Amino acid sequence: MMGQMIVNGVVTAALIAPPAVAFSMLFGILRFPNFAIGGYITVGVFTGYAANVLFGLPLWAASLAAMLAGAAVVWASDRIIFRPMRTSSPVTLLVVSIALTFVLEHTVRLVFGADVRGFDLPLERPLVFGGMHITRPQLYLMGASLLVVIVTHFLLTRTRIGKAMRAMADNSQLAEVRGIRSVLVRVMVTLYCGALLGLSGVSAGLDLVIEPLLGWGLTIPIIAAAILGGIGSVYGAMLGAVLVGLAEEFATLILPSSYKIGVGFAMITILLLLRPYGLLGQPEIKK
Image (cartoon, rainbow, N blue to C red; front, side):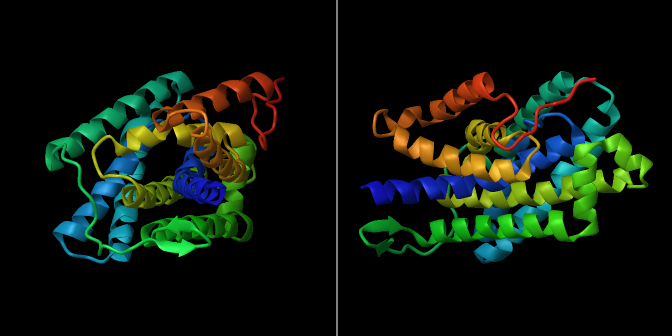
């Protein structure tokens, strides 16, 4: 039983790690918490669903379609909505992002309806390793998450644009003075994070059911992971995802499974009281 709970926790961590990374990257560059991530995930999962079920594409191709749709929607929302409001307070932008989530989710509901659905995948028995059960879609999910971790690490440490992203996240004004093109960096971040959120939609559709409120249901665990690791810290988001995933699973030992979402709230509350800047975050220096 313990082994199965660890496997389930790792699957949950793999599900929320990529969107938590995207949330932290967007915050680091755009400097406000973008709660529209739930809506972006919903767009991604329904794009993947349409590509897989309606157009008959294999799962990998549907994932690419979801990534393209996610990148387009995140970039467009930043270009049309958030960029003109760049001088507004973070609280104002936060409220606008929540409103955007509802707009995206209800637009999807209008187009596809509110029925519960799933991807067109063959029925297969779970794989069994030492008494622990895991399905092939869950293996796909974990593989996709591991690939995201590797690609993100390579992007941030080995490429010029990645180093520019890190510089912008540390100090945007100094980065601009040093000649970094801030507009290009913001565009690249929105496109990359949009692709991650689109892929996250497909991953969520594999592990859960596909319906318009899918993304909203994942918002709290994603934000909990980002805050736990240190909001704005990409590696902190990865660590936070693992901790939230395992904590949610082990919480079922003493709580009904319907209370799992409350674990995220509890972890956010405790961490903000004890270490407001997160496990890997840095305290803000005010002058």
